[in-house]
Structures are given as structure tokens and as C-alpha cells.
Amino acid sequence: MTNNIIQKRLTAIRQQFEDWGVDGLLVGSGTNRRWLSGFTGSAGQLLITRDKAILATDFRYWEQAALQSPDFALFKHQRKKEDTKKFFAAANAVKIGVEAQHVTLAESARLKEIDGIEWVPLAETAESLRKIKTPAEIKIIRTAAAITDQAMARVNELARPRMSEKALAWELEKMMRELGADGMAFDVIIASGPNAAFPHHHPGNRLLQAGDVIIVDMGARLDGYHSDMTRTFYLGGEPDEQFWSVYNLVQEAQTAVLDHIKPGLNGKEIDALARDIITKAGHGDHFGHGLGHGVGLNIHEAPHLSTRSEEEIMAAGMTVTIEPGVYLPGWGGVRIEDLVVLTDDGFEYLSHCPKTPIIPI
Ligand code: ZN
Ligand code: ZN
Image (tube, rainbow, N blue to C red):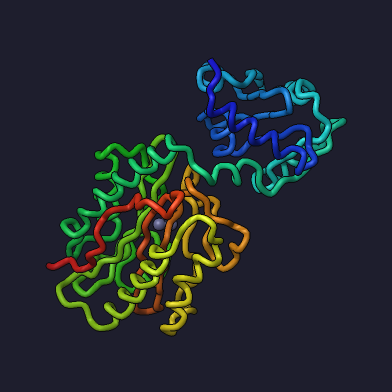
């Protein structure tokens, strides 16, 4: 039985062939392979031409590939050199696009040994199509975000003085697994005290203490899809003025985005909604990353919201994060991140966890 969604995706990718100047496409990267074929195995290559769709994989996955990818002819690769030749001969294509971002130098050298094929490096293949999620994809991401919400809502009970960053990360990971996550979207980030000045701090042995700013950035992974959310907390009753001034600034920047984001705006314009506010407050240099990113089969994917994203036009069905941050070396930082899905007239929140930073002790 063929799969409608896969057939639609194959049609959409073939429609790009003329622009790319190719008559075939080789796909080896995990997420594009999965999105185009439905095959979730960790090894394999797709070869898509105007009239053929072939999936080559090794013995470990033959059964699985036949079940998951009925729209593809299965090529049983036995890791012999002549197999590779047979695989490409079956496609009968002469100009084949390759994923320039994913092919290693070693693979590239092997491809060049195959006679009669001109390889066309492509910066993006399925990435630009994957930006717009189907209702079924949004449903999975919504569930992954709900798991993240529920775990995040427990931080104020879990985080206590003398608990290590690592221990808190593990408690949250356990909770997300118990709530049904297949795994983590990425290693849980707990950045406490001065560590909160590092946007992607890896949780270590530092013990939480009263007066700490704590950034918690995490997401559940479900059915191959990801979620992503950040909250910033203050451990103790009475934060100083510095905390409130930075926290309120970041929140104001995020609110400015959420008040205006909608289809039709580009990634740079949306980034500027937050960046202008942070810059005016004198913290432009302390917001060194982009405002947000797409989330799907990859935790970071197109579209990007940043100063370089003029070409990325928002459209309904895109799932993006809005995550302004301000980081002050020696003091700490604040980041607030929500995941939203763009709709025809605005957006829907996928993150719902309240933004209440104070953890009384
Ligand atoms: Zn995040
Ligand atoms: Zn993020």
C-alpha cells in the first residue's frame, strides 16, 4: 500500500529537479531520508529520479525498510563494491544531486569513482520542504512540548540548594521519560549561577545555592520529533534589582515578538522585534545568538530567525522557537524560550509552562 504523504513529498522534491539541474537525487542524511521515505533505520541511501524511488540499505534493515517504505524499491546492499555500481546503474540518471552539507570527503571520493555520473552539490534538498509541518507532525510536536511543559512545571519543587546541576538534569530527564518521551531532544541544560552566562552550558557538579539564577533548557523527543523550551529561575525569595532588570527585559523582548509574529514576515524582521529592545537597553552585545529556529525531525532546522535570515519567510505550519537571551559574564544570564506553530492568522503556543521565575526556599 502506498502512502499518500510520502507520494506528495516525492512529487514536491521532484518538482525541484529542474531548478537544481539534476535528473536524480541521492539522500543519505538521516532526517531527510526519513522524511522522504518513512524509513527510520540509521543507515541507508535514497536514490530518487523522475520515475524511480529506490532505498538501499544493509541486511540489518531489509525487513524494516520493506515495511516502512512501500513506496520505495528496496535495493539490498551487501556492502560489496559492485553493489554501489549496480545501485546507481538502476537509477539511470546522469546528473545526480548530493547533499553538500552531509557528504563527507571520503564519501565524495567514492562517488567520484563511479563512471558516467555528474554529481551536483546542493546546499539544501528536503530541508526547505520540511519547514512546513503537516497536521500529523504538529500533533506529535505538540505532545512532545506538553511533556516538556509538565516536567518544567516541576522545577520549582525539584531545585533545592546543594543539589548539583547534573542531579537536577537527571531528575528532569527521568520525568520526561516517565511522561512518555522516547528520549531527550538534546542533553538537558542546567546552567546555574555564573554558569548561566554560557548559553549552552553542560550541567556539571556545581551545587545550586540560594541567590542563583538557573537557566533550564530542555525538550522531549517523540516519534523522531523534538520540542524545545527554556525557563529561567531564581533560587530564593528576593532577587536583586539586576535580576529583575535583565529578566523583565528578556520577557519584554519575547512579548514584542509574540505580539507581532505571523506568516509573511521574514526571519530578520522577527529577530529585530526582540533585538531592538535588548539593544536599546544597552545589552545588544549580550544577546549573541539568533532569536529562534525551526524544530522538527532535527532540534535545530530551518527556518532560522536571526540577523542573517532575510530570505526566510514565515508561513503557516512552521514550528519555531522564540528565545531571546541576555548573558552577563561573571553574573549569569536569562533566556526565555517558547515553541509556537504559525497559523494562517498568527500562531498557536505549543509551550504552556508559566513564566514564574521565583523558587522560594
Ligand atoms: Zn532550547
Ligand atoms: Zn532552541
